[in-house]
Image 1 (spheres, one colour):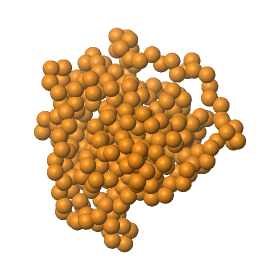
Image 2: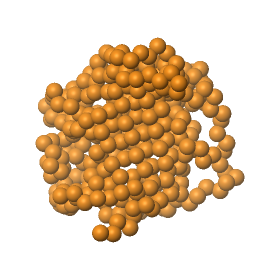
Image 3: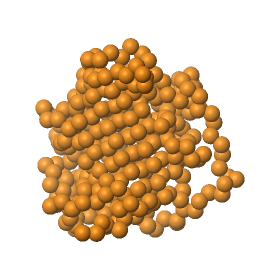
Length: 323
């Protein structure tokens, strides 16, 4: 069988995404990450950054209209808002900071049929205005074969992206130079193999899910409509996978005392977090240092997440700079 015509193709973005100072704060609030580098300019500057440091999952979660249109083209046949996330692997080449102008290139790695639809693997390459790498993100998405029920379709956000004016590449003379990124990443001292971090519990209401949907641009109605969730084969409204991944990143910031020390962060999702209509969901995160490599100056931390005694992550780990 011939591969899908999109496999192997690259879908470059024509426009850039400018990271705003208040967007960083809004996103940090959405993932409940209160490290001061996300909130206080002086703290970010003291760490060597020209603006507030965005949480780890910011660049791969936030999508503008132009970016959603780009993803729609790459996922030929699917509305990105109707896909379920299987796993996410973020490689951080440097922290994202307020003032960055980011571009994206989406590459379709593979598509394979499943009994319920397709599994689609994509790589998103995120660069700054000087074409330097910022993040490389590998994502696996599950697409369902059947169409949305008409009632569910009316619950979804209107797909008006196609009506927006097409973006045009910026003229080179209008692109500003990036400020120097001195002290691009912090290193965490005193990490030892076997060290366990204190558990942290997050509470999620449906209001939190709606807030994250607005901040991130992930408008899949399964995250706020029971009817849409049941049509997708779920028991009820579930939290965004990238929201739970972001909560794990907030744990890393708290445990390590640094918001800019992560080199890579991988999560494979096991079970969605069910958010009931009459009680909040509670997710308990834990972390353990699995290895420390003195030669490379990196350590690997494994993360766990449970809700109602059910594992949320099938596997999760972060590689951080250590000393």
